Length: 242
Image 1 (cartoon, one colour):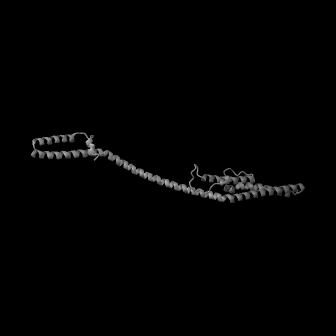
Image 2 (tube, rainbow, N blue to C red):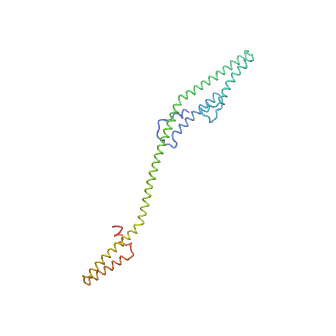
Image 3 (tube, rainbow, N blue to C red):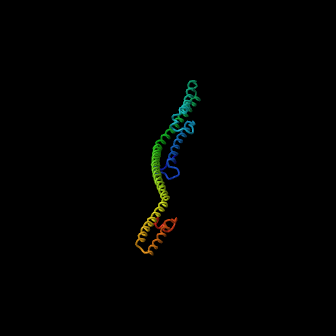
């Protein structure tokens, strides 16, 4: 019991061991109560029960009656001898023996009670300190749990944001190729329109050779616009990489 009580009470931080230190404190308190129960057994030779606490022992009327009965039995023997009127030398010796035994029992009881009082004076402050440490560690644990709960909530919020961003990015990835194709075709048709207008002016003012060159260029441009090829170098150069 004394070994269990001699533990460090100044450590109010969270224990890093597999089991928190307040488990030792509870074991110490339980051992103290068990020690008092054993003392009661030694005094009165009465079984207090394996699961009784000190408070339950003091409230156990049957147990107290058994203890009182043992003491009353000694007094009853004396009263019987006196009532019979047989107080001869042998009986006087017997009475003296019984009285001495009674005194010895009372002395033993007083000694044991003094031992209990001493234990209470020594260990009750320690038990109080142990309970205080248990409360401090429980409070520290509650703070840690609260902190972890906040961290988990922040992580959950960030995951929600990431999920939204992933949905947006995936949507953009899906629509970007179609948008770039439309942009590419639109630019080509703008070039074709400009070339057509230029060709019309050449027909009015230019020579047959110039007209032929313009028609050839216009024909090639028209082929490039109508050609279903958006995987070539020009497509990526004019769209994704501009």
